[in-house]
Amino acid sequence: MSDALDLIVLGGGAGGLSASRAALREGKRPMMITDSPPGGDCTFTGCVPSKTLIKSAADGLDFAAAMSRVKKTVAHIASTEDVGVLESEGIQVLTGRGRLRGRGQVEVEGRILRADRIVVATGGRAALPPIEGLDGVPTLTNESLWDLDTMPARFGIIGGGPIGVEMAQAFARLGSAVTVFEVSDRLLGRSESAASSLVADALAADGVEILTGANIMRVSATGGLGVQVELDRGDQPPRTIGVDALLVAAGRTANTEDLGLDTVGALVDGSGNLVVDEHLETTAEGVFGVGDVTGLLQLTHAADEMGRIAVKNGFRFRRTAFDTSAIADCVFTAPEVAHVGVIEEEVAGQDGVRVAELPMAANDRAIAEGLTDGFIKLISGPQPLIGNRLGGGRLIGATIVGERAGEMIHEPALAIATGMFTGRLAQLPHAYPTWSIGVQKCAAQFFTEVEGRSARSPRRS
Ligand SMILES: Cc1cc2nc3c(=O)[nH]c(=O)nc-3n(C[C@H](O)[C@H](O)[C@H](O)COP(=O)(O)OP(=O)(O)OC[C@H]3O[C@@H](n4cnc5c(N)ncnc54)[C@H](O)[C@@H]3O)c2cc1C
Image 1 (cartoon, protein in one colour):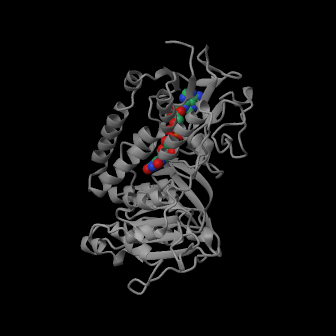
Image 2: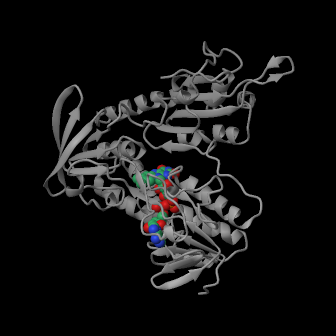
């Protein structure tokens, strides 16, 4: 193994893998330093186990069978990116914890490696909210959840964000009595409020108890994994709820401690995230940050994109900015909530912006499958004057709630990425009866009334 390197990548998750592979494509010699098997959160403790558990629960598997399927799936996907695979691709992999040691230097277990360019891709971990007693009771996080060998009869989840709602529905379907504790007034606080309501309804239909506005006063241990949760719910009487296991899914903390960032002058912000500019370079020249450690979009495909961009920016003269406007996300509940670009609340009151909405109940495929919960919402920018007529504006946002929302969102995402006018979406014949023909029907509302619906100005919810 040579110490003369072009690039050192700290961390072997989605961001680190992408950066290492991007360096190979640039004709460079990368070394990836990883303290655990390559794959990171996504493969071992995030996307892969969670999506397998969701599917297993939907298929009606029992807890033991579901967990066994999770382990097999994780092992399968991990095997496609293990050290052997990476080395066969040409990436040098060193197992251990890396630490910056001044400009262009990284120390790994006493060994000093040198490279002019370094990518920090050390990811994040579950944040522990400041709740009295929380650090003294047994809690589960996305890391320990997958080691459960028996299903908790009563399962509490702190946090009603994407991870919380996905796990709430899956555990409820597996047979747990699930309670979600969400401090704000709705689930999925970053989504369209109509999407939050639909997910709340779907979870309630699966038997999940959703406590919004739930301010947890303190928690205490009751033996084993059991925890008592004491709640203050404003004007409602205080309540104490006992659970047999408590999952904490209330945000993420970046892994920026003990990395030697100060030795190169790379700053972290007040939340502990690694500060990067639009080119993903930190405040230290030649040191880039990608993935969850930056606190930017905490998604696997965003980490992957950041890895590519950071490496190009490190080695090429012309730099590319990391643009999040066309990066889609999806919450994998039933129905799914997929989103890209702006949401309606963000553009309320903006001149010329218009919103078109189509309920899934107006989509023949949804009717045929008996899965009509959901909607498509498209948001267009101001209309340009084309000839002597107004055209449809460019698409700037979309939210889709429905059975296949995560698959449907990429048509609007591509439209945003390419600056497409909504007219293109409306004019392209879509196969009948697909779910995505709804996108065409929805976009048509920017031009004409369709079945009594036309585009309108954005409203504050
Ligand atoms: C339950 C859950 C479900 C999720 N579901 C989805 C989903 O469906 N879709 C989606 O897009 N995203 C999902 N995510 C988010 C996704 O997993 C992350 O955005 C992604 O894994 C981030 O990749 P990363 O490379 O930045 O960090 P990580 O995957 O965390 O990788 C960082 C790696 O660096 C290692 N490391 C840290 N410090 C050092 C050091 N000093 N030296 C060497 N190695 C070090 C860590 O051990 C880790 O292996 C989910 C996350 C969770 C928790």
